[in-house]
Image (tube, one colour):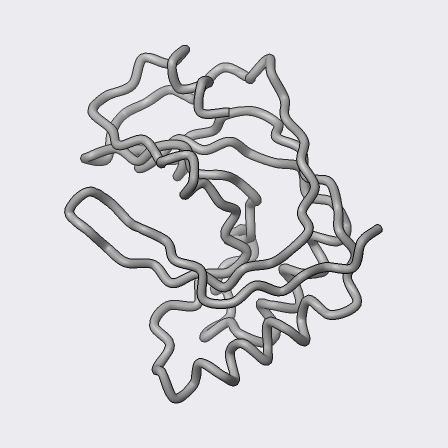
Length: 162
């Protein structure tokens, strides 16, 4: 998947290390240590009863779509289980609802971030598509470092084998 970047003429950027590529279902921001157990319980409840599902990549995209781009990502499909999981998490954990109807979740895997917002054309559709099974949901802690964000697993929530 990261090989798709080699085909693109990109301004200065930082690639996402392969072990850090992930799909963010909901960014919840800072969570106080005293609220961590409640957050974990909410994610456990939101993911309960859901079966494993297949996720497939579609094509590379630039984000945001309008104005200077901050990153290149690989868009994925949006299967019913993923839609339900994201809806449940947003209902339980979103600090404030989205203000605009068009401001919706768009499933993607970030491949690289630009060092500065850049004028980049939308990438050509990818020829290689990958699919993989999503068998667990992971609560991650992000740490901002001079070399970029590092993500650390806090808790994992297995899905029911399909």
